[in-house]
Amino acid sequence: MVRPLSIRLVAVVTTGLCGEAGRRHQATPAVTCALGRGLSAGMLLATLTQGGERVTLQFSGDGPVRGLTVDAYDSGDVRGYPTVPGAWPERSMAGRQRLQGLLGDGIVNILRDIGLSERYQGQVSLANGEIDEDIEAYLRRSEQVPSALSCEVVMDQAGAVLAAGGLLAQVMPGGHEDRIWTLQQALRSGGLYEALKEAGADATPAGLMHALLPDLEIELQDHHELRFQCRCSKERIEGMLTTLGLVDLDEMIAEGFAEITCNYCNQTYHVMAETLSRIRERNSPRENN
Image (cartoon, rainbow, N blue to C red; front, side, top):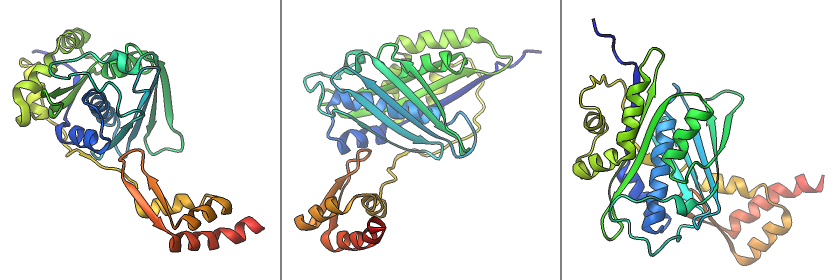
């Protein structure tokens, strides 16, 4: 009798949402690639527990992009933004790229909200600014789980996203760590990039798993559709404006409208003077008490 290998595998194909994120933020190809890797990593981490998990990744560095923020939900929704979307405009992304200079030295914060009264938060120094390798290092150091993680974005000469995705493998109790380290070496040498490049628009999560672990019997247990989806709305923007003081509201009313842009999705909302006046009326009694 052969004991089954206890390895947990998660794969994501994020081609469409990575392309949308780059377009929304008018990001350079290099920043689109980094943000795409972050979106894929966030989605992979959001699958580690069951039921209603939200994962926030906050990268902060001294490199040209300064930082990246990703918000991912186990439902398949994900959003994110770069601090400086126009960084590295001259960098060609044709072929597999190393991006450690884009983020530079810094830290990554990982916040995990699993629906309880408390959030779990971890922070580690950036291992090398490669996004996926930094998250893998976090899993090893902070969560003490042998893991192999890779996220890749394949682009053409013009910087358009041709394929994107990620893969996470973790040893479960009773599993063989050797398989994880073997997979890690394959990922480090570009195995996932080549699998995505070959599959292109036809890439699937199961296809990526089989391409990288052809001799492993894989049992598919769950599947989610992914989308770049922000949770901002006109109602939420108006709710945020209720926290402002009367002086700020009066200035906006005098201008005739307020223009608010969501960091996560770059959607711009215009709140007209009539609505601002109603908000001011609701705020006035509270401030006069």
